[in-house]
Amino acid sequence: MSKANSAIIEFHDVTLSRNHRPLVSHLNFTIYQGEALVLLGRSGSGKTTTMKLINRLFTPTQGEVLFAGKPTSQWDEIQLRRKIGYVIQETGLFPHFTVERNVGLVPSLEGWLPKQIKTRVYELLHLVGLDPAQFAQRYPHELSGGQRQRVGVARALAADPPVLLMDEPFGALDPITRLELQQEFRRLQRELGKTVVFVTHDIQEAFVLASRIGLMYGGELVVLGTKDEFMASQHPESIAFLQCLHSQQLS
Ligand SMILES: Nc1ncnc2c1ncn2[C@@H]1O[C@H](COP(=O)(O)OP(=O)(O)OP(=O)(O)O)[C@@H](O)[C@H]1O
Image 1 (cartoon, rainbow, N blue to C red):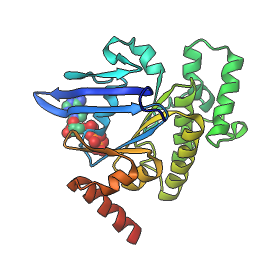
Image 2 (image 1 turned 90 degrees about the vertical axis):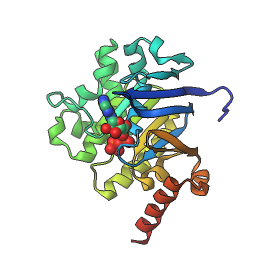
Image 3 (image 1 turned 90 degrees about the horizontal axis):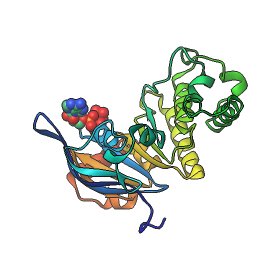
Image 4 (image 1 turned 30 degrees about the horizontal axis):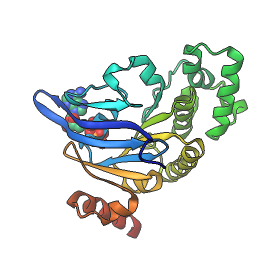
């Protein structure tokens, strides 16, 4: 990775306040093309807020966020969101649309031909491990939680956005399916070369998925580095998270 010229998202002294209280403060960091950056932190530390500043669901009170070198405030909102796939825990699938229609939604909004959409949807369902013959015509309520998550990932990838934001997408799954999806997703992310920003409060998940970990605490980014750098960090919050990891491993 050539860090000198491959920045895709940049936070320049970003603060977001509500009612005079900062939700996140003085965020300064860069996300590079093709990396998997995991934002780790306890509940309420500001992870989701940071993510929503990327796709402009929130705009900074101070400072600016750049996407592909241009402040998000200067992007056309729709253009920006088309370049940034978004996967959340509840997946946000439309309940009255089949899997095929859900996955093909953005390509169809972009005016692709029906035949192209179908080919793309089938390709994506294969990619996320769902047999189209079995799943394309089902509705979300006819799927398990893990299958819905796969459909959510397929949908976010449909128009081939360079960046994916994933907010605790595997949170509601049993631990075995969860590990399986984490590993598959990591493989997929490397294969497709996507830039991924992933939010979690689970350090084990951070270690499976991350090329770098950003640790948030009280609305600030207190550690940012590789797994080795994270393990060497002396910040009390990284030590607390590492203790959780050790106790999970022991039990
Ligand atoms: N729209 C909002 N208006 C006011 N306060 C908000 C808003 N959204 C989030 N907050 C507050 O900002 C802080 C950070 O919230 P955020 O959702 O970013 O945390 P998080 O680290 O993602 O937590 P979790 O792991 O519980 O989802 C919290 O104190 C939350 O109550």
